[in-house]
Image (cartoon, rainbow, N blue to C red; front, side):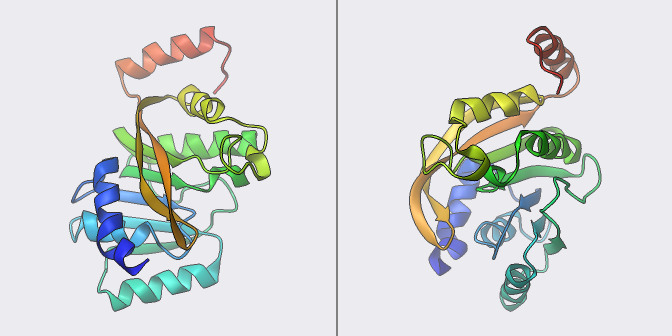
Length: 204
């Protein structure tokens, strides 16, 4: 994991679309296996907001960031409720990695609305869809497919832009996996998508 946080994770996030200077939210960050490489990648001009409900994990992350001299990591205790406690339109990237399966459909919808709220126009939403029907189904994803999850996200005014496959962090190990990437609709795009979603019966 040290090599992942130092270099491989940086390369992974760069391929996902994270850039130097970005402000990024890592929701459900645990001990920071994505927050740390994100902080390295965005650099001093960027910010990482690391959100989790577990204080011990956050303390480990805070200690690690301090030891590495990463002053751009901001710890936020939360995550049990579907809220992202940063200002509207203030971040470039939101990571929802291996966390959505803890939320039922209603709370997932609220969390996606929160991601939409905090992202800048055309901001990046990256989702690690672990524990769906196709991959060790668990908790609220035990009956949900990847395509069903993708549809949920698109219904909340995000445009799917691609899938990024790679070796990646899961818990405290590295496995082969992939993330789904989306862009926030804005302006005319949002108006058009709203019309389409309304005709399809979505109340998002």
